Length: 371
Ligand code: CO8
Image 1: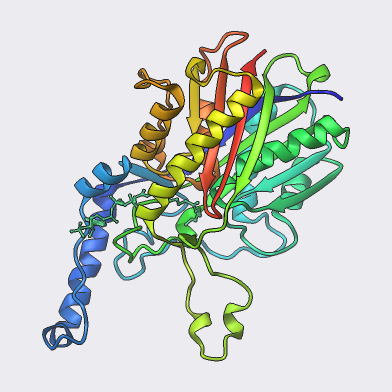
Image 2 (image 1 turned 90 degrees about the vertical axis):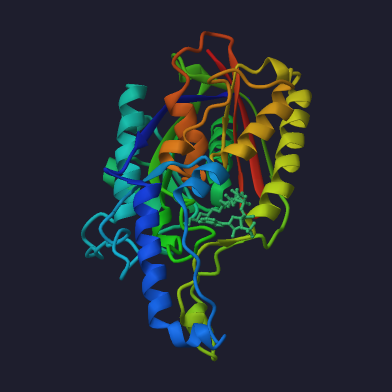
C-alpha cells in the first residue's frame, strides 16, 4: 500500500476584519434599544433586561481580538445583526464554493501540478450553503477537476476527518490526489444577539491537497490519522429541513449555533489531550518532542491547556500556534490556517500535529513529518 502526503495548502481570507470593539458597539446599541423599548415590561418583571457585552471580557475569556467576515455591513447594523449576502442565481457560482475555489487555487499553485492529476474533491465544513447539489461538485466543476466529489460535515473537526478520508482514498488506490476544502461562513449561523456567543466565529476558507507518496516531490508525510466521536448536546445547530414542518411553528424560527461553553471546555480538553498522547504512543512518537502543534482554534485557554498536557511543558513561543486572535474560531478551518501559516521553518524529519475538535463531540489527529 502506498503512503499519503500533504502536498500543499491554501488559504482564502475574506476582505473585512471586524474587531471586538466594533462588535460590542453594535451589540450594546441593540441592548440599549431593546431595554428602552421594553422598559415597562422590564420594570414589571415580565421581561428580563439585556446586559451589555464587553471587548475586554471577549479577549480575556477567548483570546479573540478580531475576525474576518464575508460581509460587515449587516453585522455593524444594530437593526440587522446578520450578514448581508445577496442570494445568487443558480447559474452563478455560490458564495461558499467561490471561497473554497480561491483557497484551492492557492493550494494548486503551491503544488505546481496540473488539476488533471486530482481524482477527488471533498468539501468538509460545518455549514453547507445548501443540501444539494454538493458544494464539492460545484468546486470540482469550477476548477475543471475530474473524478468524483462529495460534501461531509463533522463540524469543527471536518478538516481532519477530511484529511483522513483523503489519505485513505490515496492509500487504497481510489485516487492519485485529493483536494479537500473547508469553506466556512460561520457569520451566517451565529446569533449576533446572543451575548454568550456573538464574538466566537469568523469566516474563511482553507484547502489541502493530499497525494500519493511516490508522486510527491516535497510536502509532509502523513504518519498517522485517528478520529473519535462521542455524542454530546453541548454544541448544537438544529437548523434543518424539518424546521418548517413543526406544527407548533417553533421550528420555523431561525436555528443558530448554541453551546454550553463551560461544559465544552471542561469535557473536550481531557478528551483531546488523552487522544493525542495515546495516538502518538501508538505511532511510536514522543509527544514531548513534537516541534509544533497546529490545534483547532476555539479558545486560547483550551489550546494552552492541551499544549501543556501534550508537550509536558510550557510551550515555547510559536510551538503551539495561535491564529484565533486575528481569525476567531473558523470552525473546521482553524487548525489548517495555523498549519498553513506556521510551517516554513520546518526541515526534513521535523514532526508536528494537526488536531481539530468540536461539536459531536468529535476530534481528529493527523501527525505529519516534513519530507
Ligand atoms: N461580555 C461580558 N461578559 C460576558 C459575556 C460578554 N459577551 N458573555 C458572558 N459574560 C459573563 C457571564 O455573564 C458570566 O458572568 P457571571 O460570572 O457574573 O455569571 C461570565 O462572563 C462567565 O461566563 P461564561 O462561563 O459563559 O464564560 P467562559 O469563561 O466559559 O467563556 C467561552 C465563554 C469563551 C465561550 C468559553 O466557555 C469557551 O470558549 N468554551 C469552549 C467553547 C468551544 O470550544 N466551543 C466549540 C464550538 S465550535 C464547534 O464545534 C461548532 C462548529 C459549528 C460552527 C458554527 C458556526 C456558527
